[in-house]
Image 1 (cartoon, rainbow, N blue to C red):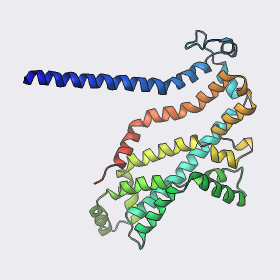
Image 2: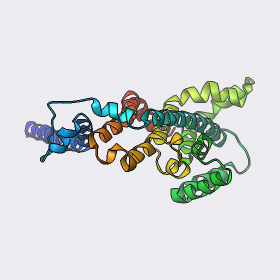
Image 3: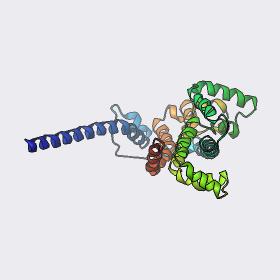
Image 4: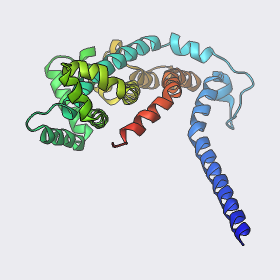
Length: 286
């Protein structure tokens, strides 16, 4: 009877694993198929795509002409450069603000700290639409529309990232801080030499997520810029779809989307382990 029970348990576990693999495979296909279709369409010529009465899931005559058109018919390279500048500058400023704020809320002892942090967290309850309206009015009054400053300034802080990093900083033992202070270490030096190295996985995660957020930013750049010289890739794709070749030449449009999506996919694949480690560490206590 004991052996039969063990066999039944092992068979049940194998069946569970098989079902899990089947469900995960179906989910993976559902998620990855749009990307495959996007790349496939970008490799088809305009004539081949237009002549298809039934969608073809492979192409025997791939072409890179659509990618050449994506860069030659619209200033896609300029959109790329604008987005890189916007993403890097915003992320750098956000990291400075986030690290200093998280350090202050986790380590510095000042009157009303916990209450202030509670109020700060309450800001997460405000709908983004209301924040966008307030930021739009402020940036317009400061005459910062169609400028990189207007694009960057409203995005240099994040309540969630400050909360995440503050939780990481709080896990560092207080005794380490008191020992450093006893040795005459300043707060800034302790932050740079001790806290940041210990919490590097979370900081890397925040950096990558912020870059992805900036790269995909659409609503704010769409509101604050109406000059093509300040378009980001997300706005550029919309402009291509509405006014450029994208309304008719779907393969070229897909080529532009592939070019824009590739950096984020590559970034995630390279740093996926660090992202998972940072998120996991952010959820640990003690």
